Image (tube, rainbow, N blue to C red; front, side, top):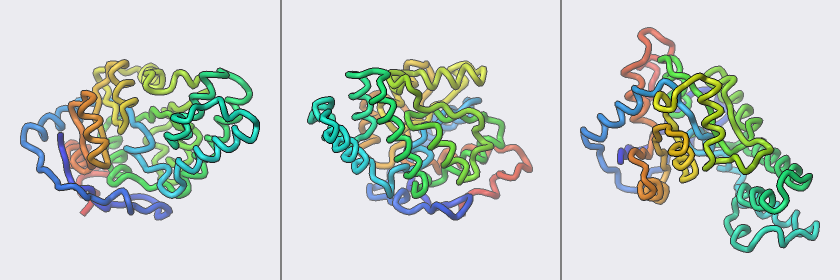
Length: 279
């Protein structure tokens, strides 16, 4: 596992600032030469990079907690006499996507599911206004794209929310039109590889030429199903341990080492050449 301290670099419009996502509370273990070389090979082989959204690119619900959204969903269902549609354990996850998928399993493709999904999209759009960019994400995406890699977002979040965030950060040109997010077919959300396969097909890319960057077990499983190499991003030790125990061979706690590798292979003279990196 490659572990590096999170930095406090901010690139792009000053509407969103890196704060809580740059806190390092655990002892930092220096990566071995072999780990660094393995990471270099993984990065430099990737012609197409498939990014999960909430985690590797930003902390979407940093200031608009997902737990509060889930609680409102549960209350809304109860107010309609539908409390029994979700179990106590599903409510206790405090994850609105868990509640949405639970309702969809019991009433697939219903008006109720469509309304709940639209409510979640609205909350995600609201959350983009105060989302915290993941440290080094903006400049890494820009540098990697300038170096020739193609980018796509493959996420369980609404594509409308993703595009809203990318627009604010000035990152839309790095991805457009390749944003593949939640659709009405909720059973196709990750860990189903549907969004990854959509991206690969649209970009004409072989799975072995791609790299998935994700922070959850569902990301890892989707990448495995799609036969796409996987790089885990874990902002804390708990997530790092979960990914490693599930079989992730490569996990980083900062995007900084990726940026350092990509900068060394950037297009000479490009606007995001090594000189544009964090101090």
